[in-house]
Length: 309
Image (tube, rainbow, N blue to C red):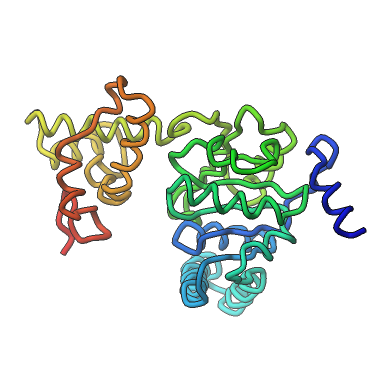
């Protein structure tokens, strides 16, 4: 009877299952992005399960969250150290860790992945979890470049699938891009918007188009800066200075590329170019390709457009 009831409930559409406020969140991926989302969710009273492939990774993630919280406390509770320590412990109590994504998903209102930008890996993950998560559970991806509809296609809950694109570092960056596909129900979309607001973030509504809003504007801008330099029309130093002082940007395009990661930049552009090869905005850059081939990805490897060693 329990199995039969579970199967019937899974078959109900979101129009028949009124989604309550998102309270329990499972975050798949304990890297910088996943841990950052977990910190913010736990800090705003949500029950969070952080999932990754090993206990060692997860212990490192929790240690990183604790370190980040200590930095928050130094500013927020400068005159009240005891209250600050109490805040840290309260937030950490809201975070549990697991290496079993399927088990975690069974008690979640929202399952959000922040794993490697690989379509098949994401599809396999959600395809497996779709068989285990309750009918009301919303699935979401933190992808910055892959189509949400392609990721969702491995599931039977297209109406309960959307995108939540956070920005790094998550505790500091206020924006969340909320992405709906043509199949995402209004109820699901509203739940994702409300969840973003509950985190203290400012959500913007996006369609499931390449790069959504921010990256769709930002990545071609960076690539045009690289092409400008390739043509000999400006040094990377001068281009960075010009955009910081002339446009008021906190970082120039070459500095930002090194911060984001040149491998990430190339991955995004290659994906867009494959889908729309005739779009000149998505044309490859020889300079970028060369640096990536040499393993010079930016700050994380010690060298990209600039050297950091």
